[in-house]
Amino acid sequence: MNRNSNAYTFLFAIILVVVVAGLLAFVSEGTKEKRAMNVKLEKMQSILSTIGVDVSREECGVLFKKYVKQELALKADGSIDANIKAFDINLKHELKKPVNEQRFPLYVTEKDGKKNYVIPLYGAGLWDSIWGYMSLADDENTVIGASFDHKGETPGLGAEINQSWFEDQFKGEQIMEGSKFVSVKVVKGGTPESNKHGVDAISGGTITSDGVTKMIEERLKRYLAYFKNN
Image: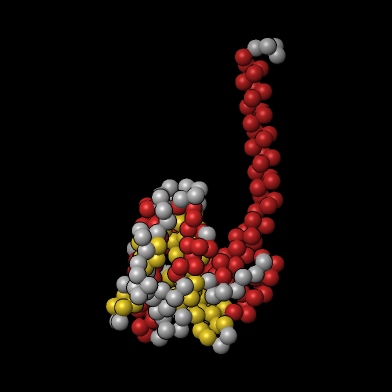
């Protein structure tokens, strides 16, 4: 074949693409198990961080078992679905289902003799998904800690949701006002110290801040039925 012809060029390009794609697929498959383990350990780290246990990925597997006493998959009515493992629930997929078909993971932890409830969160930011975890004290009201992350928020703006200065604001906030669920809102300019239901929004990250507010409210209210009956 004439190496200067268009046919040769096209054939060479096709072969190159096939070879490179094959190599990438091979590498991806070879690291699939490792990547899955890293995701699992990162999830454990995030859950533990909301109750004040900060550990390395090497340690979190052991400490997760130490602090997490129950992993529950809840139905919309607050009852427990014993056929599903909470850790295996993918909230991105669950949110596509009608609420009465969803399952809501809940991690019941114990630290220093006190019970906490860790609730996974998932929602939408400015550009893509945002997610996180929020832990409540055994009064089922007071926030012990929060951890957030994102897929593609703007650096220096919405991406600040995973910074400690933002997450730490949630400690001590409350989701109930008497017997009424009011959640915790991210408010531009913050709220008075006497108001335990709002934290300061991210400057320049209004849409992401609103996304965090909606995510927290939508997810937390799904657990009220469980708390009411337990």
